[in-house]
Image 1: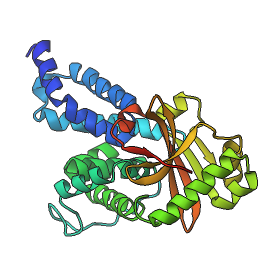
Image 2 (image 1 turned 90 degrees about the vertical axis):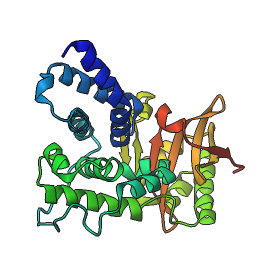
Image 3 (image 1 turned 135 degrees about the horizontal axis):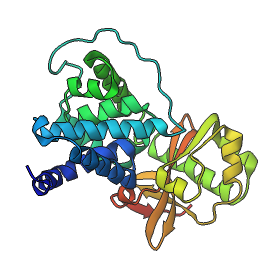
Length: 290
């Protein structure tokens, strides 16, 4: 098998591999890096030793993405209970992958934000299984755990995705009021007003693209977050992003950064800065009057 044949085979799988990597990493540029690394590993592998090229490449991209997630300073692994899980090809509590993928696509940026709250292993298990139908036996080899443990990771992640989606609570009117008040306090330099809207343990996170623009990867604590926003946000705008009230920084008519708010009981618990152009190219933004 010559190199040209191998390259053609790889290119056939590239779109799927990039989709997997983008969901795992939340960054188009990092996804490209992961896919390129997978090609380098394939080029150093004897083709005859790979029985299922698509499965092999998906597993390799998963391992690469997992390592990249673990090296991020904002990540940490939670302890895992390895108790046995129910056996079977698809337990009753595991939804059909096609149905889950439709649900995931429907929440758009909300899913991206919620994925950021998962541990690397949870994120990988959920994305590979629920969105791309990778068997738990294969996922287990990536996370170096048993298939039962891999199933538990996906189940835990699924509960968080279904229960913490920013599209659900709070109701639209209340959410918009909180985001509007937060933006007004920021633009007015009202430190006390910002503190009143922030949960004491509030966190602000930035994706790789926003970090490259100069934003810190993570800021924790209400006072620290308020100090950042109290400097003013004159260029920021109130907007509906995929029908959810958020704050955006626009450039030439398109969002450059979306500040995705997570709100619980009327207070801001997290703000995720999303600047990856591949992710933002698919969002629908409607500017609002503050």
